[in-house]
Length: 76
Ligand SMILES: [Zn+2]
Image (cartoon, rainbow, N blue to C red; front, side):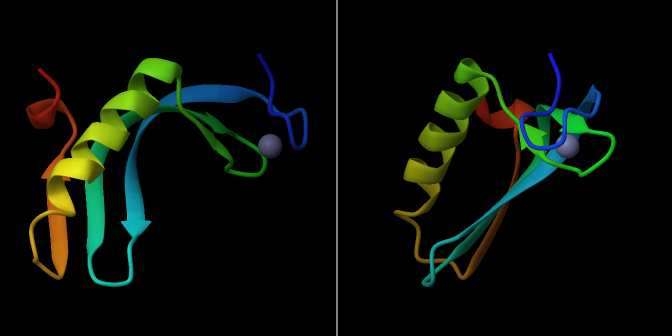
């Protein structure tokens, strides 16, 4: 599999995923992703994307300005 944008090589990495929801900013650390070595584009597989969605759904209920969580600790 290569980068859809620039056809560069992808390498598996843990990245920090950030969502800006205006009211709150959520940072999920250590998310497994494939990252393009050329342009830095990040790709998540279906399972990871679902987990990210679940974590974001849970955290946006909290009215904290910034939430920082660890991916692995939030995936059962
Ligand atoms: Zn690329």
